[in-house]
Image (tube, rainbow, N blue to C red; front, side):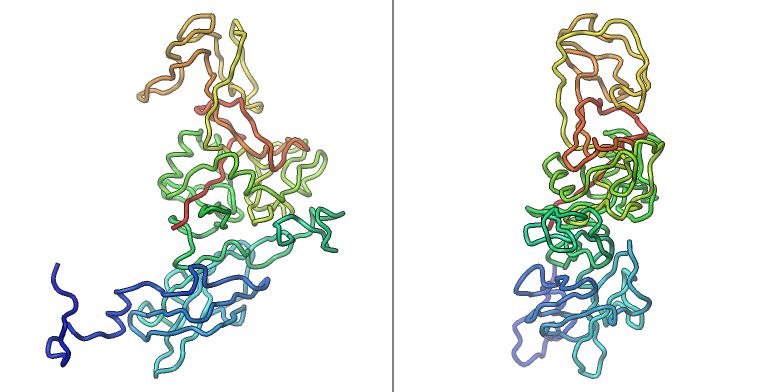
Length: 393
């Protein structure tokens, strides 16, 4: 590494020149708070005062308390299900900075990479009306009052607002801040077209229909820099989502007459207090926890199980496969891990991965604390999908 700056008071050495471009490489945004942008209305954001921000090919700016809204869009209007980016721009001629909001992830219309800098972003979507304790309220402000389930509105999702200092380690699109430096996807996992998974509105959630099981969801999640939620995280993300109904999809995609999955974000009321969609119903969500079933009797013979119950899929099995007809510790040599080894367990199929939320025809059984503890992790089942998360920076 060569010297980048030199101590030259009279600037005979060109390396001593301290210009905007050099300052921009020396430090990130200096701000009173990492979360220096916040949603202050359904279509309004506030940028904190006293942030020092350098633009590589432009000026160094100290912000004033600034409110931006739809008038700051470089083009178009806000649309549900879209991710937007916030830019600070140098208009030149020693003028003060301006702020633009854009769907473009590189730079806003009319600017380029040298005279603009991305400083944050947000998701525009469905929100639930809540109080300061994150508990749902109805139109009159009554906590869980009559009609609270349908008290939702379109707007900036407050917990989706991210900055260069307050954001997930992965790509921030389609995510909300949960708690304890953890971010959660807004939408069920769908195919990103590059071997990973994405959180996207109006997409088909991936399930066993695409050959996915617990292991493959973990593999794809890792490629996207994310992971499955654990049960406590799922409950926090799902809190405020209405319970399913038996004869209606008004509150979740869970009516008993449904026969298949639905596009992500399809049911308006199926939104949690923090803005997560479809946490209840649509498809089961694989969780990042394994348990062992304590079965004290061994079923004999062979049988075929209905795939919809998730217990053992539509797989023929014989009790005692791999290690006898009575419970004992041994290798389950028929577990379908070709090339990956086998499971050492006491009963066949006793290792279980938890699932949360219920699926498309679970009716009132689908809810924000619903959990299943009966599906082995290699089960490829059309009702099993995922909801992912990521640690923050």
